[in-house]
Amino acid sequence: MKETKKELGLFLILTFIITYGLGIIALIKGGLDKFPVARYSMYIPAIVVLILYLVVYKKSIFKNNDIGLKFKGWKYWFIAPITIFGITSLTFLISYIISPELILDKEKIITSANGFLDLNNWTLSLVIIFLLNVLIAPLLNIFMFLGEEIGWRSFMTPRLLKFFNPFTAFLIAGFVWGIWHAFGIIMGLNYPGHPIIGNIMMILLMIPIGIIFQYFYFISKSVFVPALAHGALNWSASTYLMFVFNSDKVDTLIYGPTGTVGLIIWWIFGIWFFMKFKTAYNNVYKK
Image (tube, rainbow, N blue to C red; front, side, top):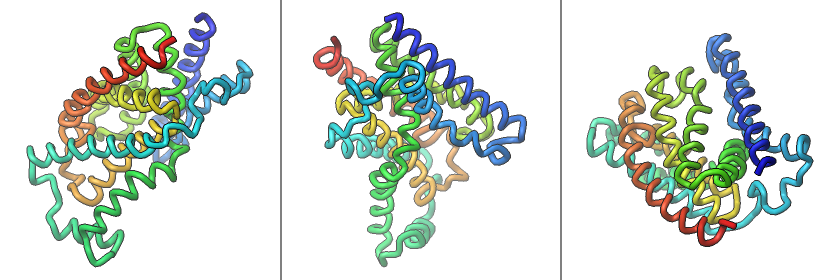
């Protein structure tokens, strides 16, 4: 337990020093456009884990499936991203019901769909665009999302679960994951113009989303699964805002997967997945 505490502490210290260090430099230089290196912060959690394993503690990253670099749980490689896409779609659907003016008019949707993939059938084009961005794009960009998921899902949270009950562990994990985004939000990512409330929203969102991703990691035993789910979230939200919704009218504090609408939906599903996780963890994984 003492060794685990040291690993966890060193991981958090190094991850935040490097990430926040890049964030401070970016702020001083005038933003992410002036210091684009900071955009690669998503790789830092995984890089720190690999350094700890290979350099500091000289442990095998493959032994005992420690960080989930296994090609397992194949069905979840499809179930996880489709589930996340479904939840993301629900947040946009409810946003549309609340404010129908958020959606682009039909002609603009047809133009954007056919402009990207012209099949002489804009509905089919749109369906294929979403399938590509939900299933294929996350796979092609898997290393980007592994950068975070190796750190949060396969390294940090399992160690937190050794010290705390699942509820407390997930609250801590979500808080850490949320504040890790702080400098990105300050510089306009996710919640442009809302650096303070945006960071609060991010923390509140990362708790339920983290629970869902963690469930898929534990049930599949593969970190590739939450990485694909992470990718599906990012790509599906971007696709809606690019092809269906007017991104200029969508207030990210209110609508979509990052707004208040999304926060409520994510927490509903997060609680449900938390109960599923507890069952799986206690019956199968807890030792």
